[in-house]
Image (cartoon, rainbow over all chains, first blue to last red; front, side, top):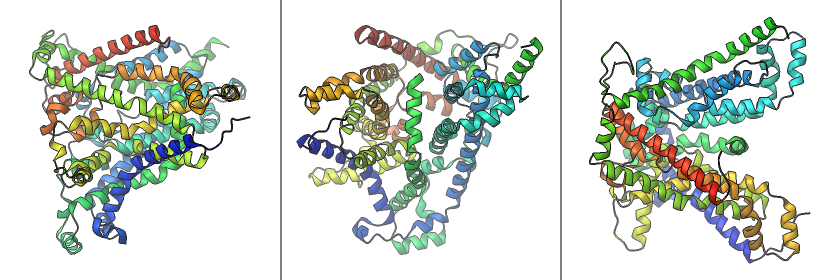
Length: 285
Length: 303
């Protein structure tokens, strides 16, 4: 039985507050969207007329490409390191398991900080290369622990019977554990994808070369630092813009929409994984 | 199992983990060891520690220089006050939101509101900062609203007084929905029979919210509060770097941004490592102290 009450004044107040919450979160996005497609005065006509100009912005596409590369590489590597590091920790036969767990836990509480990491990456020769955004971020200790917690829930008997059949640990991991762990791998993968897609700071620190920077760094130059004037893209484009009386501001708004759409459209489908991630985190955290 | 079998098993398992463990050692442990440069006059190209090369050990020189320096007061004040504003105005909205959302009847409307409220969390900080900066410009949305009330337009993005407000609102806007997930999941864990008996005893909705739901999520609230207090010295450097400008340094410059500017851009490696270490140590002590306090006062602690 659940408590059933009559719809009353309290419900009205609560629903009004919730509508206000939706308005506050969605209105800025809506405002940007409207300004991106049109001048405020003619907003009602909803003419989409200058997204095509963005399509010819080569620098943006290059940055888009690098972002996709960083996202794919990091996601595959984070999944690989999480799986291969989590699995051995579930084996009772592993010698020195406590030591390995302690080795993983220390960096979660204490780190060297920005500058020592920066110096290390420079010493390793990763500075100003694409690898600076791949190798140091190819693992996540938190995800290793989450994956291990999930692996522990897989019945030991499955592993034992496979071992009797002569399977080695690599086979057991790839044939039994990984297929059974899709839910946790989805959580790890999606968090990594969104994290890498949105990150700019590491690139800002390690990659002064603008030609290898991800999309967010390009956006930063356009939107925040305003060192790229979109109205000066090229002669032909400038003419097209003049014809359309487009402002730099509007182009910026359209760029926001253009680069955020993939996240906005895919996010409702992934939402359950994000929620699951938070819950899993709270179990141990 | 045979001894040789056990060894083979272990060899396999370690072979599997080893690449990851080596990378973790490299990128997590060597930087910790690199903290040694906080006590040296380090110059690029030198090793962090060596017996053969001349390392100029300077003791606590860099710590003293920071504490007695002209920006110490400003940076500490900004760091603490921005985090404090965030705690004061940002801590309760997720709780309130979760409590109210729990009372929404329509499942569809509930789902929609949840989806809408998490959305800003997934929009990149760069895009959010770009939006905010365009809103606070003299011809932006915020100034349009100000002008509507007959006030004069101000360039808010270069106004030091406006920065803490802009930063706090942006931060809350971006994270309140996502932070409510934990509370919502704690609420679903509350025994439904409590509500039933309260209803039968004639409790109103607000009474059961106050006397059942809120106490039910008290452990979660305590833990979140401990963590929030523990991170008072680590503000959202990412977002501040995007939103601030030299004009707003007086109210916007925090430890993280100062370390970034002087360390990465200015090359003062030893000095900024010392500042980073100092803030890590203070943070550690604060988590410890707030954990103790919470244990004493509310009976909940992290460890």
